[in-house]
Image (cartoon, rainbow, N blue to C red; front, side):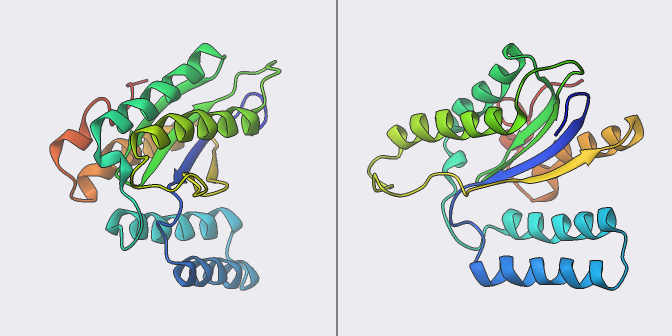
Length: 186
């Protein structure tokens, strides 16, 4: 993400997608791109399938079912605004989170460092809350994240509608469709 860009991000808890499923989806994306599919379209198709796997939660932790942990993540996301980012919206689901972030023009902020810090801070705090369930050497977040650059206002509107409706679409209880699980209206 470069200054002046808006991105849609998804990051997930460690161990929430079966490795074979992740490899199969990545192979499908490569095949689509090699077949001449527009790279953005291939990326969207990959994401839709990947997010559907996360929504089904076939394996792994669902730490954000716990309200205290969901509040930790929501609070840290909102803290990004204090560093200069614009948080257009976010959703916290049991095993992953979606975030729509804008890095203002003329910014000297580092997007990667901000997300790494978000992972570090939430992981450290949440690890204390799940200490009996999570060994000290275990990772909290899966390394990396899915990122999709939002090109214009129309796409931003569609992405925010997706983020805000994801919990409902995934069949989660009403509490996941409200604060602290779903972030601010832009």
